[in-house]
Length: 249
Image (cartoon, rainbow, N blue to C red; front, side, top):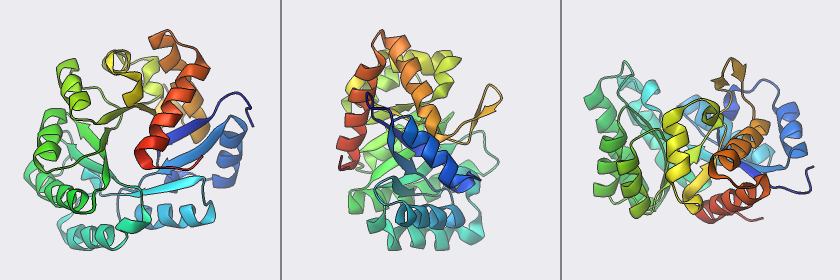
């Protein structure tokens, strides 16, 4: 365990990990105290909830319906699962819009509207996927009455970033800070108290699959970009995540 820093991986697809015990042990050794597991469909949502029961206090569950996974014949069952299990999760995610996906945009918006309605009704945080759709996602959640949200792996404009911050929402940083100019610009510009750290594991960054331990890379890159120490960034972002999700130490 790293005695000097405490980190939280705020977004991880834990259902896709092959060696969960090993990956978690390596993460803990690096100072990771919690991982927010996100779901994309019925199977991954069930797995995330299972892992949260297996690793209480370490895996924090979010359940979602990713725009890539939307199919007409699973919409009703997936939305019903979200509502039935909403009290077992800290957020609805990963959800949103992806205008590069093959799923028709109007179908994506139809599903997302239902999820926004759920979030507003139960006052749940949304963990947002918004590829080529940042402005539309922002408009939909603000008009839908969503109080709290995280724009995951934010690469949108700095103008919209100002609106996101003014609305009280957060953005998250990933290891893509090593090479993505739009992501770097956003993390440089956002108030530190609105930034969460994550890995989006097991996403590949420059050919290497990520794991929860790699949130240390995100922290280091955030520190570099902002001219702060690793401990300053770790302390601030960990507190941000705990405060947003009402997590115990």
